[in-house]
View 1 (cartoon, rainbow, N blue to C red):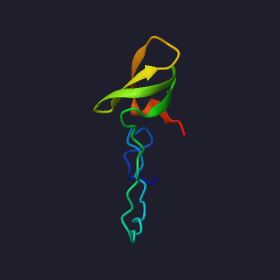
View 2: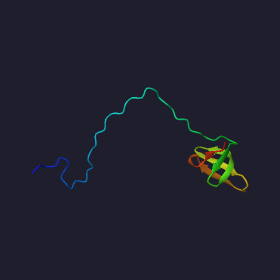
View 3: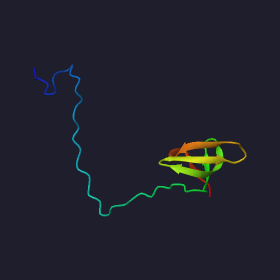
View 4: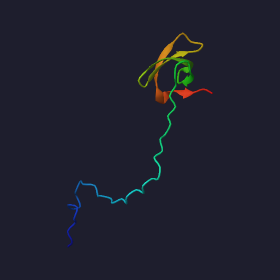
Length: 81
């Protein structure tokens, strides 16, 4: 009977997959991320508003047609064109 190299049929170790090396890229491309600045109109889950304050990755948005200001993360804000 052949013995399993990985530690037997009841081993909890996952088998190791060998992956070939990735090809080298010719150019370093940077990805441009849109970041709203002050007074930009944006769409949030709560509605449309204007950015009035920026603190790190949080943006204070003054909502239109509502008496509210909400703090939103960059991931939940979309630009209005």
